[in-house]
Amino acid sequence: MPLFPGQKESPIKYIVFISKENRTFDEVFAQVKGVKGDATLARYGANQKVVNRRHTDSVMNATVMVNHLALAERFSISDNFYVDSDHSADGHRWLVNTYPNEWVETGVTASYGGKRRMQANSKAPGNLLLYGSSGAIYPEDYNEAGSMWDHLERNKKEFFNFGFGVELAGGIDDSTMKYTGLKYLVNYPIPGPLFDRSSRKYATYNMAIPDQFRVKTFFEEFNEKFMGAGKTLPEVLTIILPNDHGAGERPHAGYPYRASYMADNDLALGRVVEFLSNTPYWKNMAIVVTEDDAQDGQDHVDAHRSILMVISPYARKNFVGHQHYSFGSIFKTFWNILGIPYLNQYDAAATDLADLFTDKPDFRPYKAFPVHPKIFDPQKALTPMDAKFDWKAVIESPKLDNVEDFIKKQE
Image 1 (tube, helix red, strand yellow):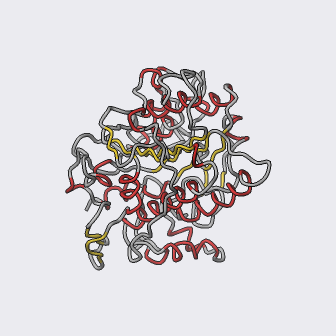
Image 2: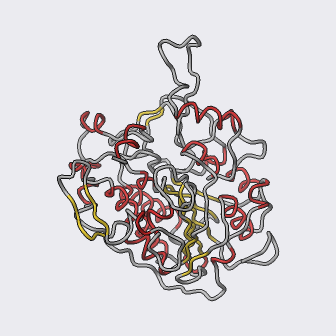
Image 3: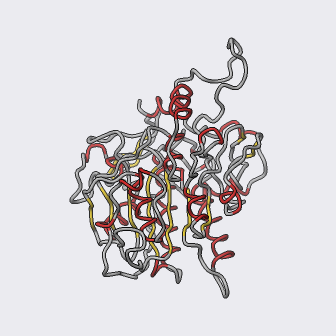
């Protein structure tokens, strides 16, 4: 692993950056050997009792996120990684190597508290804040040097995006929006490099769309764009797999428990790693997996401690890193690998992920594990995606960052 950009050439030529949603470290990895964890908080780990909200159905001794645990045993994780964010809106700024300004930090807090929305009795009528928890950067908070998209383009590094940074407020999101995830009602500008290099089919945030459908779209587009004679993979791929955010139970749609969303996400991650590790690019690839924030779980060390995984032939085997890491650490590592400058003070000052890598590669591919069929049935979740349009689906679709849902799930 290079200690700084340009120090030496890295064997890693392709970076895949995967973002998930809202989980703390203890919820998933507290039982992993060698970690600093509280196993009583590992509600999505091994040998768990999964119960629906009404306590009318349960699954005993279940491993909810089996692929996460298998990947942790095979590759590297950190138990000392902390997200810089408090919730989704600022988290998605940090995720693309920018940082929230005063407009975001004040507006998001007020918005989450329900005090900055369009209200009929407002003495200042009009749109006081529209973006809410949307995962995109807006013109009002775009930093002078831009984000990772601008940085990559300036330094002539190619990338392609599956769902990052294109979820904008003022849209309709329901289970009928299987492509893109949203129907936009407001036309916002997004960074030119991102617009030109984003999938037009991959679903962004929409908890009504299974992560299984997202990976199906990813596989199809990957094969179309990057496999075959004369085709090559960009240096960076960005992918969102957001269903471990969780939402209300929907047994008819394949989600009988809140944990069903976690199992959907777990299977999707396992399938992506299996797919990528069977491509010719795997021998020069590093996959980095994290969460945008940790607002929805509990952790015995800190509310910001979250998931960081390095999956690569060059990842240390069955390794738990204990050095302190932040979002800046992820980007510092990317820039070191690619041999380009740092973008801002946060990545420049961070500790890189060097201790999670080795110079002794293991090129064996990964084989995804099936999830517990009673917790999540992939085919049942996918079937409605090909069904005829049904307004009932719109009514029953879960809403992103629904405060009432956050409260209910803790009961």
